[in-house]
Image (cartoon, rainbow, N blue to C red; front, side, top):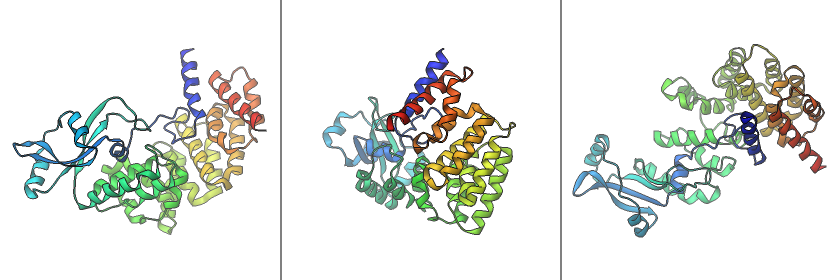
Length: 356
């Protein structure tokens, strides 16, 4: 019973507008990005070594906040490491960006705990970025991932020569709703993306790189995507979701139908099937011309694998489609349908009835 209650609570979260899928059913709010941490901070300062102690930080300039807010904050707790000390010795004007504010942000930047954070050593490129971030921050809300202006802003820093800014942009693009990611395709070269994918040290950024590769239209990118998509469909595993999205970009309806066949393969793990359903959901939400074909795929899958019912209902809930509702009604009536799935299907059916 506890499991049922927990599942229902998770599903209730889907009543809010959809966010990036951390999993198919329960969408866990991602930790705030570095840019959100900067924008949510109550005090933002540039600091250098204290005159009386070269191992401690001292504020040189307040970028955001006031002397009063700074005085109410606790002392900067960090010691200056050896690498940063060398940077200070090489250029005494060097400064480090420090922020004071919420320790763990939710998507709205709210938290009662406060702490200092060290962001990075400043240079001209990072100074310009901070200024531009501040100037453009009114175009989106903290933590907002479905905002075209935010995606466009950070896409300008993809493959920036400053690695820290490039990494920040990759994180931001990785958090973005896929529908807002598609318009930025082609802003970087395929060779740059492949360098990222061929570097094991960049493994954490591979999901973002795969999505960007899928949006490339040159023959090299298309060839790589088709090969890796086919391999991913056969073997499953990590990044199945991203390669499926890339495959749909490359081969459209052919890829959608191939995913439909893979979803009916009983040898596929539940995790792999969930990833493929999410890919079809993202593709249909970002490219409405594919929704009819995806609905047909889902209808066939429901006949062969009712265990995917909840994932499919979540995937299509906001499409305004009713083609699957007859199947949903039949599944609600079955005693073997688990209570969490019944609950969500009833919610979807009631929403449709209310809108008619």
